[in-house]
Image (cartoon, rainbow, N blue to C red; front, side, top):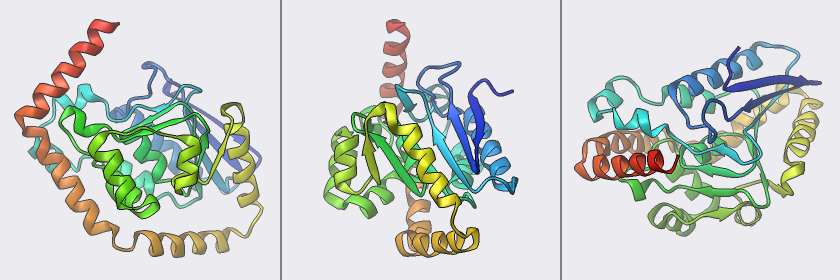
Length: 254
């Protein structure tokens, strides 16, 4: 049993919840990413499951990369060890995925939600890509997907300034599909997943392929560049200084 995840099935919908345990914000450690990948693959292989909902706690979807792991990583290790390949496999899930986002979806946590077919946000959810503030860059598709969904101006504002976008605004910008009160996010996501599950699985799968080709046909090359630069920046002195200061501040606040 993975304490980081709670997995349940509602009709034809598999609900995967990040529990906030052992760390409240669901930082995307290798253990958590590995558990998510395993849960997604199990959902793909279960013929009774037609759609997957990915959720966090009521206060945190995910705060993004586990900075304790990032702080120990070098550029060459990131490149040679295929850093974030598991994340790519989750993004390529063979069944429809809905992100049910409440609270904070930060950095890689926000990028994880962006990989899903649909994002359902609490109206007060807080979405951000703050990586430049600690000397790193978004490396899991955030730069590319925000441009696709909301345009270069919004992407530049979020990435270069760290601007926080709330859930209701994310819906207006086309980043999220729907925005509802926080208490309704999980139910709404399950209802949408159930509606998808009632439709032809073959038609849904082919439709997803068409949608992805239209929106992400050029993405592979851009993602390679993004991932490479996200790896290279790990070796800069500025990154080491800023991440170190952030971790020291976090330890002192506990």
